[in-house]
Image 1 (cartoon, rainbow, N blue to C red):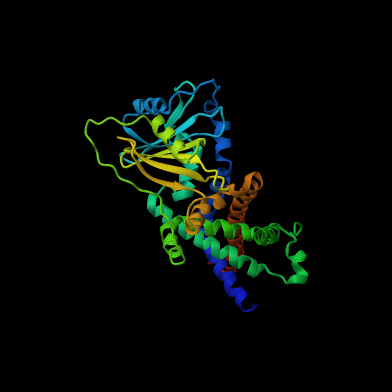
Image 2: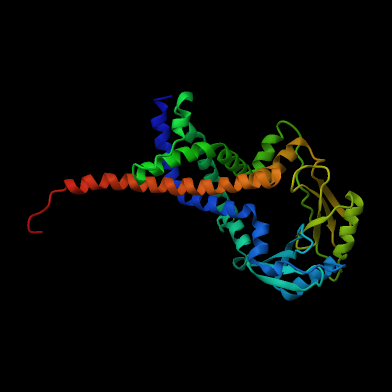
Length: 372
């Protein structure tokens, strides 16, 4: 092991140098997204509305958004758990421009709208998810995750001082200069955060290559894919009101709160997302898919009633975001994101300090040309 450590240290440093800035971004954006919904309510006061005894129909809210944004297609609507929260509609234009609109569910009025850059939470999510670079960015995020996984595994191996010296290995030296202070802090902090970073990196990587992961799981047993129905355009045909589809889903799957609506196939398919009482997963849903022209059912996808392989895949996002254990796990993953940012920044600083010290003797050793 003693002969392996120097080699691992060299690889660890090169991975850190190559990915340091990107991992710093991932750590900061990931930490900011742990309490994304709560932060949105704080920075956008319009998202908090005054409740009334009756809500307006969901179809009326959609109509208001589509009327105000004729060049955009609504991709989904998110319904908050708070009674005083606005419903958030997400839209996309033909050129890929994203736009969001918040609607007061009691009055049916748009209380806030703008492009993605006017919604910091949405912008940060897309930075974290794909670096604002679409599929190419998602692949790069996956590569980052693999690099982080390598460093989170090799870091403790490099650090390991032996069972009798663990306390010494976790000690941070504060009185022997900045380089010593940051080096010991980097090592101790990395050792303590390693397991959390392994979980975060592994779940992130598996989400990037989720389709491939599903195929691997199919070797051991059945895995159910989410329905992806298509509906052809019927010129001049009207659509069933969304409220009727929501009522139909609640009749079929049980009366549970509505959490999302997602639209696909050019808006001709509506997926109704209800809270699932069949799973302990915080973001587990009972999903029902409908043809918006005639209300015909196009499939169900119910969390807690799916094959084990499918449940494993769906748990990835829950674990990655820290939502699996309520407030304690969310705080833990907030700390994990901040730790990743701190480790990335300190690693880059240590590299800079190390190279600066090497340059100084070289500069002093250069002969001076008299009269130059």
